[in-house]
Length: 248
Length: 286
Ligand SMILES: Nc1ncnc2c1ncn2[C@@H]1O[C@H](COP(=O)(O)OP(=O)(O)OP(=O)(O)O)[C@@H](O)[C@H]1O
Ligand SMILES: [Mg+2]
View: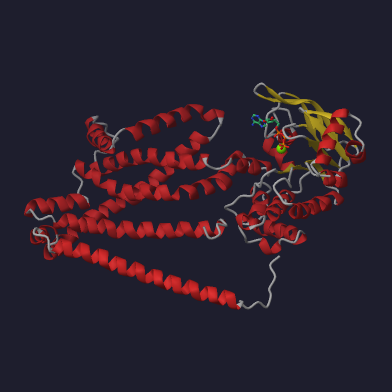
């Protein structure tokens, strides 16, 4: 079957700094790919490139077989198919939780307000947040905010969900709140690419784990291979350091 | 999830509440007493000063004040009209300029340049000069199509200058919105125009309401400058009256009328702003 996401020989630099270096990656439908790697290894940049938030220097990115790195393509059209949740919270502070979720369905997907609110309510109910619908994001806990951000991306039925360290700003209990949502999505068959430092979580949800260093994938495989029993010395070293830091 | 429980305050909490009430009562009485002392002292100092009788006659002549009130109000009505019409025009022009200067669209590059030049020029030239140049300069061109009505020309001058100020205020508001907000909106598929309209502008404008209110109050006062072209506004009306009688009460009347408008306006807006802030921000007790 055609993969949802296909990246070939991607290259991206900021000025003189090469951040993504000849990176290739294939993400089949209904699978979760987890990107691990030290801080600064290029995980966020890769996700931002897929979402066309950054221009790339070379290579090809395809979504459902369509090359989105083609300059003729409308980036808004591409982003409509993708959902992205960021490292820090990106809810809109001037809109209530429900309005945050309904914004894109109304403005981009031309739903009526009633339809959009109905979608929002269903999602909020499913993820146990319905009582927060009228609140502004600032009044929510970090974990709740991040769950709303995920719900907001789901409201438009994305083909592919990009999650950038959605738990990095949260304490361990809140981390579990968010991770359980991600696990639910995974069992619903959502296709996802996640960047994370939570190895335990990566082991649980990943079909494929990629270890990034200096913008290239040095090792890839199942969680058991890459995290459990890495073969590349650099990966081994990274996993060892993660162990020492007590994050596994 | 919030839970309801059958809670009744502990005896320590009740004590605490009683203490808080006592403290706040004490603070209110301290505030009241100190205000009475200070204001009373100021009043007594003024009234017992040697020049008070003269000042009272020339600045606070109640009967004369009543007599000139209608003409000053009539003048003030013009200030108000100019302010309302002016702020609508200024709002539209300034918003367009601010958006123009913060977009990246390639097609708009020349307009971005023009907008920057415009704001630089009109922020740098004193308003009075702009009024004189437009008010006397434009009619001198003797162009048929352009009005020589000084009220209109004067207002145009005010609008030109204030649009430059206000556009810079709005622009700084737009730039203060964190880029991640834009990234989030674009990721949801919103176009750049939709992102501006539904995500950036609502937050930016809310942030700049206090400085914009300042500009609005200044505008109300600065509309008085068009009187230099011979337009009769509140200040000019007061001036005509006092130069006739050598009594300055009309100025005081005009000042009080301005205050009657500006003070409630600022108070009301302050309250409105605080309302939205407290709903959207979790500040705690600080
Ligand atoms: N807009 C930018 N301009 C210049 N350099 C950038 C920019 N964004 C990222 N970089 C650089 O690119 C490199 C990779 O950054 P990136 O954010 O992708 O790392 P990361 O793997 O997500 O790290 P972390 O785990 O800390 O989030 C870093 O060295 C960073 O300094
Ligand atoms: Mg990152």
